Amino acid sequence: MQQLARDPQWLNLLHYKQSQSGARGQSYVDDVRFFLSADGKHDALAELQATLQAFYVTPQVSQCQFVARRQWLLEQIPELTTNLPEVKCQAYQEWRGKLKTQRVVLVFASSYLNSPSSMYGHTFLRFDPEGIDQGAPLLSYALNFGAITGENDNGMLYAYRGLVGGYPGLFSAQPYYEKVKEYSRMDNRDLWEYQLNLNDSEIDRMLAHIWELDKINFQYFFFDENCSFRLMELLDVARPGHRLAAQFPLVAIPIDTIRAADQAGMIADVIYRPSNRTKLTDKINQLSSQQQQMALQLAGDINVLSSREFASVAADIQRNIIDVAYSLLRDENNHEARDSTVAKRRFQLLKALNQRSDAAVVETEEASLSRAKLLPPETGHKTGLVGLVTGFEEGVGRGKNAGFVDLEGRIAYHDLLDNIAGYPKDTSLNMGRLVVRLKEGESPQLQRFDLLEITSLSARTAFFKPLSWQVNAGWERQWTEGKDELVAQVNGGAGWTRETLMGGRLFALLKGRLEYNPGFEQNLDIAAGFLAGAFWQQASGNLMIQAEYLDFADGADRSTFQAQYNYVLAENSALRIHFKRTLNDSTGVNEAGVSYRYYY
Image (cartoon, rainbow, N blue to C red; front, side, top):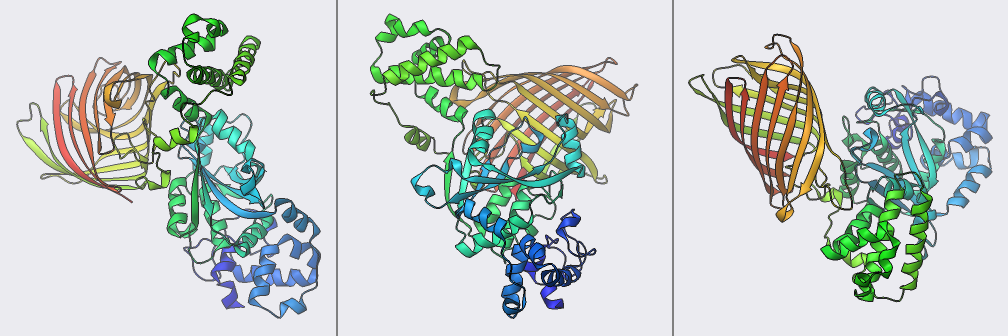
């Protein structure tokens, strides 16, 4: 019995932390209804004994509640086949009959920076019934794990409680079309569907265990015990041996869990489901500048259809222009209150589109998206980072140069200069970035620690006008009155970004900053200012040039100019060079360095 209690699959079924060995440990489950022993959360042997006892004493209730445990015990102790009281679990069989699952799909929803819970993306499972290849999977069921939040919880409160485990987490199921509507239509998030190569017995084990988890509470943590970690536990139950959940003892970034499943040989195929906004953007890019302008005019005035200019356009191009105008109105309707005038115009455009249904389409959606050569997210660089920087610091008025070496680390996940393959363009999201500096003749010192850094620099166009924004909180070194001070700060800004030649971006943001600096007369001070710059993102490397100016309330001011270039060596390695000049009132400091960056 002691040996059975240590079996990895029994510990999987109890959701015991895989870093612990033996029958004693701790389960991630925080619901007493999941345990038949009062000590079950901490004692796998006691839970095993209590389970066997319950299967004899209350067979109908216990065996039908813990179907996966029953299946596993029958495999491990064959004599139970004849010894255990026979039961018929009608509710479970009806549920399985309703699902008729023949395939399991792991779905990744791309990152959504406007929601704290989805900044790193989100994963969930889809269960496809028999015959799904002959029809769309939208009627399949999706299984999601998420935090149960309050109706009035704002983003800041959610982020805080998510970090400290202040929410319960539950599994929930809903039709897949509801998830597609939520992610693809409302949030403009692309979906990547990873078909798993689970066989019938593995699917059976997974579903039997999911039945056991109905309405069972887990404590939800944003970084580790999150949606993706819970799904890794389910895959461990389905196919024991890979210890997928054990690979994420501290942080479970969704895309990293996709990589873990891929490296375990569990992914058979990948299907890309672009969001409505992605499809619309692709349609717009197929039109010439003149045709794009015509589509914009048509979206605002249905009379453009009867204009001489529109009549001069070929029938297939007319259809594409109408399609863009109609899709643009649908996109706007997703985020604004319904307007009867706009609804009427949409109907007229749809009618005009149907009247031209025989017109050839210039390029099919599939061909267009294929042409874009989009890379699946798991092919991008890994999200952890370690780096080694060597450089020098020149202080104006100090009379000498000081060489330094920086040791850099980052928990997650991607910045604007990192290799863009597999990642959203124009966005940066970093958590737990730490830089320790070693200077000549000095002790190691904390140079920088970013709790959180988020930047969104999506370009404004005639069709879409996203707000560019940035937030950052943490500690950093600033030369103040000739001293190298470690300051605590929170800053943020908002503005706009425009596209330039060769795929570049120009951006300008108005900024505010709250800083605690021991070198200030008033240690706690606020500042207003701006940030402006340009960046270019290419497959081989990325370049950014930016300037920032801050005017503090106590009369001090700070100007910063910075240029950085990141050269991609391989998928998970890069070289980065930087130059930075900072001017605090009369104190100027120049810094230059080169770094090797490794992603893990």
